[in-house]
Length: 231
Image (cartoon, rainbow, N blue to C red):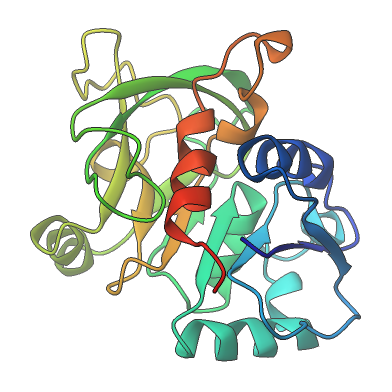
């Protein structure tokens, strides 16, 4: 699997993402500065977490206007797979590659803690190593992770099976208490209609080794490694 991690000014989770991808694939991903062209032959483009351009304007809004994002959109139009985590999710939304918006957390505070996610759809390139309904722990670190969309969009996401992950409690229940940032319908991550783009707020890449405190997030990267095998 050939993967590239795009690095914008202010990105700070690219090294974590590199560790996760190398652990799952055995190959070094390409670290691509946003002014460089997107190379041919990629299987996966990753937008990592951080504070691109200092999160001025709206989070991800300036990065979404970077010239490389035009190439990322073309990559998506060709059926390429894209993963956006935290700020990467915000960039995907600002670029129009995923629907909705990410507002300030309901508490108006930055949240840095573990959460529990429930897999809402298995069998995708991002979730094939999980069964539907499986739960796993993931760190969260964001101030603007409150997912929002109008009711019609939320109904479409639900009806078309495009909700990827949901915030739940230890019993796997999508409760208000488990939804610490206030996201609509406890949504933590979503898919594009073709299931080739995934965005989520928590950080599975930060739990891929026992030295990190666990391997809860590793199945996402193993799923990608198995699904996106280069010819």
